[in-house]
Length: 206
Image (cartoon, rainbow, N blue to C red; front, side, top):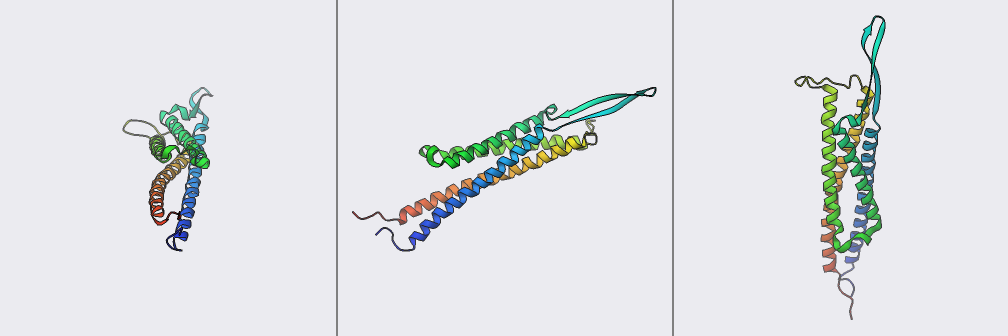
């Protein structure tokens, strides 16, 4: 007979359904992580504000100074934009690889490669978000010990947009952490289920 009992077929079908459900869940999470990281990158790169200050008055004539705040003036924000840009590209590539399926699964190396890249990008987005958060806190509150003045009271919209980019980046970080956890867990469950299914299915008679 093909199966040991009639109960084996529902178990096998349930395994296939669970595998497909996990796959689409991970795809959805990757899409959200891509959107969050891409949004953080775009908001930070396009963030700019120009403001004119009166620095002195000669007679009745004010002396103006025009300053422009841009993200590339701060190395931490440059790193933030690069890190989130790479994470968004990573998730887009992973989505394409998943849709292509087993064509790229060379001798079972697909999962170790994806897991390693996920962890690398998790560390990357974590470093970028935390570096930018440190500089954002400094810009908002300053540092009286180092005599660094705060700037967010002067460049409010610039700081608000930067805060939005930070929120999107930390969302991408949380999603990457969830993706890495679920991907590893799903791989272990699939391997365990495949091993059990192999033991339960009996070969066809000669």
